[in-house]
Length: 305
Image (cartoon, rainbow, N blue to C red; front, top):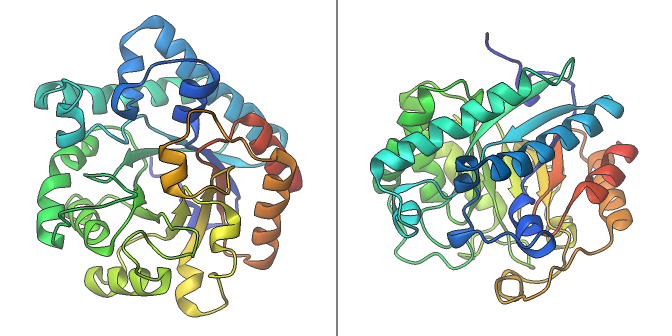
């Protein structure tokens, strides 16, 4: 059964991609390569992952929101998986298991509008992309992971924390080849521009032009609201931005990379800022927390929405 996606209706959706920073800094869990998918291999790891799913679902239900569950597959691609000892067959299994875990969890949650997003990350460091790919190279690179995810019950694919248009174009081309709905989430620096210097407007316009508007919608993630609030306007390109998954910290990406302690910001302020963005930009349908956030931040946000 095909489920209605956020841009197709009026339901607001809550989502969360801050789990890894919470696990590392708050719970003391070691995540080599920032990979959370290995947690699926142990009972304790699955227990930790399930608690996030259940807490998010309870919060969405209590505030009459839908929920998008993001899979643990952000770094489950060839280069980044191989760097921590996972080969092609291992990664194929990891991607399948990650979606199967969410499908099983969803079946126990009751009457909450839910979507399962197959989370795809960039090939290289999102904050300092080197050796940028052409769209064709990006499509070929991400095609393997996307082909695996096609065989699962994921409702959509989301390319998260992307830093330049060509990689986004390639992901969309690979998703289109399998007729999978796909969302693109760009990250921005403190000046509201992508790490490559592209403006958000230029990036979205270029991606839409190259893919005939295949992206279901665009999002911004892994940045504090202060870094992009002034960038969003009422221009037609900005209406393609229908999701915000923000950081708790105002720090730059370089500062976050070198941090030894978690900067959780101010949960109350976080919720108020994102709710204000939704009030101003009514096309926003998906809101949530990225680095440094936890259920306190999401609770403040959902309560205001």
